[in-house]
Length: 249
Image 1 (cartoon, helix red, strand yellow):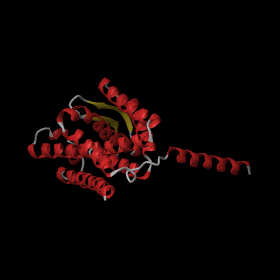
Image 2 (cartoon, rainbow, N blue to C red; image 1 turned 90 degrees about the vertical axis):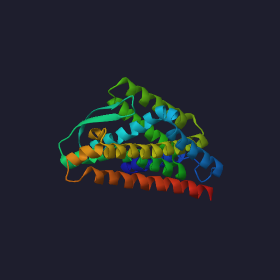
Image 3 (spheres, rainbow, N blue to C red; image 1 turned 135 degrees about the horizontal axis):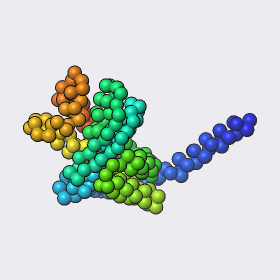
C-alpha cells in the first residue's frame, strides 16, 4: 500500500508540474497580426545577411545537436562538438556500425527543420515554456561537448537567453520567442539545404557535405541523400506555414 501511495503521489506531482509549466497563451490565442509579424521576423532574421551572420550560430548548434542525439541513440561515444566562425560545425564520434554512422550523419541538415516543427507544435498547444526548458537542457549537453571557445560562447549565450525567457518571461513572451525561433530554424534549414545542393552541383566544398560522405559509405548516391533531406525539410516547412495560415483564418 505504501508503494502504491508513493507511486500515486509521484504521478500527482508530475501532473501538477505539467499543469504549472503549461501556458494559456498559444499561437491560436494570439492576434493574427502578432502571429504573422513574429513569423516574418524569424524569416527576416534568417534571410537578411547581417543578422544571419549572428543568428545562424544557433541554427548550426541545432544541426550539430541532431548529430549528437543520433549518435547517442546509435550507442556511439561522442568526442566533441565544434562551431566555426563561418557558421559550419563538426560533431566527432567513435562509430562501430555502418548503419549507425549513416543514421548519425543523416540527422544534421533535417534537425533544424524538425526542431522548428516541434517548437511550432509546442507553441500551438501551450507547451512553449516546456519547449524552452528542453532547449536549455539540450544546450547543456552541447556545452559539455564543446571543443572551442566560440562554441562555448554561442551555447552559453543561447542557453542563458532561453533560460531567462523560460524562467522569468510571461506566457506571451515564451510563446512568441518559441514561435519566432521555430521560423529561424525552419528558414535556416532551407538555407543549409540550398547551400549543400549548390556544393554538389558546383563541386566546390562537396567533400565536406554530409550527403557526399554518406554516399561514400553506402550504395546510394549523394543526390538521393539530398532528396531525403529535402523531403523532411519541405514537409516541416509546409506544416509550419499551415500553422500560420490556420492562425490568421
